[in-house]
Length: 383
Image 1 (cartoon, rainbow, N blue to C red):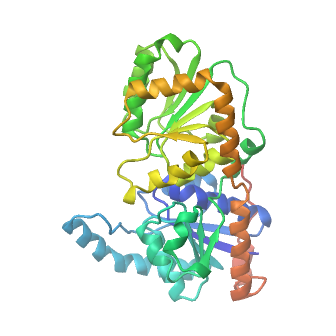
Image 2: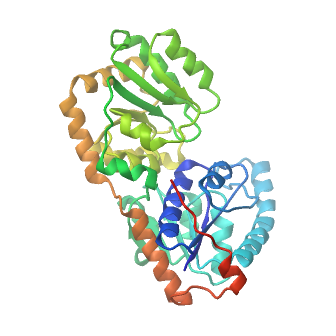
């Protein structure tokens, strides 16, 4: 049996690869366990309990890009975060700790390293974040999803495996379409929404009026723009499902003929496994412009189109949607090329390395636990 602790989150881009790893671990043996550590403010506080995994919380804030007072506050919070991390690790006794990026990842992975617990990090982006750059120096293994990330870590530690994809989305790898009458456009901007995409899409409707009877939109807006976007579609007579957050992304992808979205690494991994043609609009304020670097891999392969948000108008977005709808053979080609980039085995490969780390450190049965601790586990099922 194996117990894995996954540290980090904050956004879906960090968390969902961790969820994918967790699903792989717990389905291998009914006595395997996964525990998450995150922050109260991150998306993990809502998603992880819903997925059926234990969640421990630490109080920690980011250090990069802060004003002086915020930076000072974050620095003063670090000692407490380390103390909390040590306590969690001592209580949970994991065999392996994997950091997936985000604020909680730093103190937990560092504390695990100091305690002699085997550690690894999973870097989703082509350009690594600050936390993972630091942790990459101490962990045993660095998992990357883009070849461009290799240069930022010690070569001997790096394994290129892609971004793990949740099991709910894997059906799309074999069956990428569900039959539907209208040309379906899936629009989203990440787990928190994206005002820039929301505005461009509603502006684009003015130039798509003649197609309103043949188009259907599924649009994830985030909390703040929900009502205004919903009103925008309704006022202009378009058929649309406008929601704050899409829980069943597998079904949303399966119904989509075209996806309009940001270029976060997890989103791109999902697009390739689900074999979807896409219009990518990178988040303009992403650290080191890493979303544009991520997107370039799909654009260069012919699987996607990319527009800078500052250069994209509603009219230009409408024209692109119209052109792709009018040329189904081009869409098919983009879908095929996206599928060739997909790595559906990423979660399995990551879990295999976790097993190797456990065996090398603790032996094939993992760390010693008392009979009571060993019997606490119960079989867990996932949809």
